Amino acid sequence: MAKRLFVTGTDTDAGKTHISCAILAHLGRMGQQVAGLKPIASGGRDDAERLWRHSTLQLHLDSHNPFYFAPPIAPHLAAGEAGVSLDVAKVLAAMAPWQHQQADWLLMEGAGGWRVPLNETEGFADLAKAWGGGVILVVGMKLGCVNHALLSAEAIGRDGLELIGWVANCGLGPMDRLDENLAYLERHLGAPLLARAGHQPDPAAIEVNWHPC
Image (cartoon, rainbow, N blue to C red; front, side):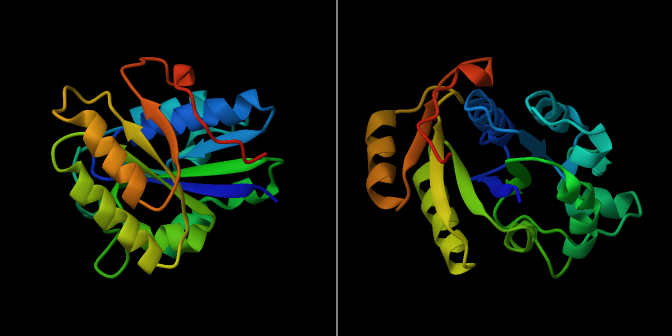
């Protein structure tokens, strides 16, 4: 059975897709069969297509990204405008084709941050819990990221999931005291730093310090 990962971020622009592609490339270089999944996307399918391209195991794009909406707004709002109801059971049912694939790793990328809603009673945190596996947190290194990262890590733990690692995305622009903020997070996040990403346009060039295989 494939091992599972869930990638979340400190906010919408933290760089989840770029880092997810880096992780897929890293596992692929280790000889692993990997697939990147973006079950729900708003603002188009560009992110899902990037995950598909970096997957060594590829099905039809609809199996990687079954729900997608054009407006670049919160997924539950975009779904409502399109007359589509989203819930955890429906999303997991759409992932059913992957149960029959010979994958070593299935990486699911969420939307926005940990508390982004799916509907009035469920959110992406509930999806992550139902999906299972470890959580990787992408921290967009910018002013305010320490608070966002610590709150996200706390919420992940309270929801009963394991934060297996985090990635510092330093490619968002200049940040005062970057090294000091990064060092603070290394001391306090309670999970290993898997990568420090810079301005690499090719995610495969990001060095990931994680060897789970």
